[in-house]
Image 1: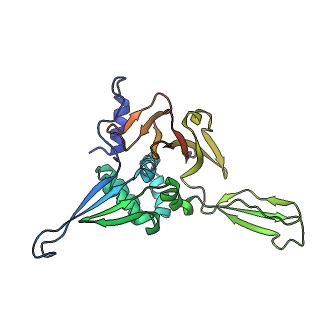
Image 2: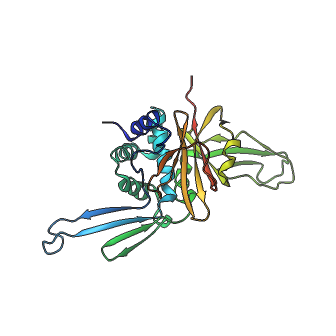
Image 3: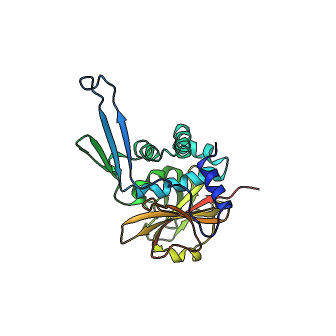
Length: 280
């Protein structure tokens, strides 16, 4: 049985110009998960409870990118297991490969998100989880441990009360009456398999002008994908490359995974995702 990743790669290889889309929906927007309680739950009558997901685009694009990243390098699942947990990685890949897309979203929500990061309410027999908001709050914020960096700085003023400073994850801005020398910023836990850059909503046409590789902490990182933002719809989508071919994923569309000839128009860049190059 082929994995979802193998199916996508096969569709690229067998692609014809008149059909540039993947053959089935992948990670569609929202989701419904039905729970069937035991017969002893309520007077021997089966009880059905629904979990309804809304506005999941704030995690959908990154879940798609995470799946692609985990399949790009055979060592990445093991490395990411150190940060996300082996059980999570195994379960995530299994759910994606079995097209259990609502369940994989619930896995991220309940395993990686804090309760205050989303809204939930019970309506009749349904638990409604609403992820409306910002993808950086709902996804990348939960990867801070993976991508955390540290930098030391030294003030030339010997009387400076904070002559030696360590800064983690934040820009240093210290007034000490002297010149401050900064050391190279390094990753706290070693070079991660991937890094996410917040692009502050550049236009997607600018994708042609962003660097296709970065040198970070003596490692080279290659551009793997991007998340995009539709300001009018307040909606996120994603673009990524497989075997040199760029694809656009948009869970809100019926045909939601297509090959790209050029960057999608009228969308803003939200994030760029780079993966660590394989050492040779």
